[in-house]
Image (cartoon, rainbow, N blue to C red; front, side):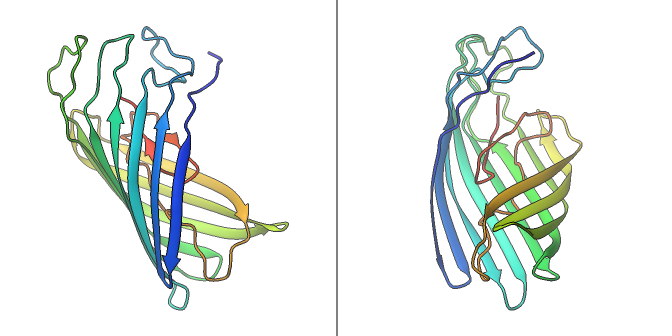
Length: 215
């Protein structure tokens, strides 16, 4: 299968006060990607979505302690091919790490996904079908120079739990990003954020690592 994916515009505002860093964002999915309801796998979601939320990062460069959290809510529009609409969901991603040096960090990451609203639409044959899942696991990250830029490579894995109307298992993520070299005391907000999308969902990652989960 070949084709193009959906468009995912994103707007974010970030500011900081010493060791405290804040972020608010709004993003969404414009369903223009390749999609057919009869296919088992698709590049596009098949429906639009709007996701908004905010995040906080505590980072102390003297101690190397870092703690991040991002809370968001997603509204899913109806899939006009299937006449199915997933309910509003909440997703919370967190990460806690210790910088062993200026280049290496280790720690824990986790996420919790909870559908708040019921599924609906004339294509709904399963009723309310609220879903949820959580995950937690280790992470390790590396910061290194790439010319006049900065590279960031992160490995993390999760064991899922408390699943309801979702599969439960293991999943792993590899993140690689290139950005302008920050100040010595700066750290990208949500650099350690996981995906709160369940393992069976094809998470759509934005530049701030905020995911949009498909139905």
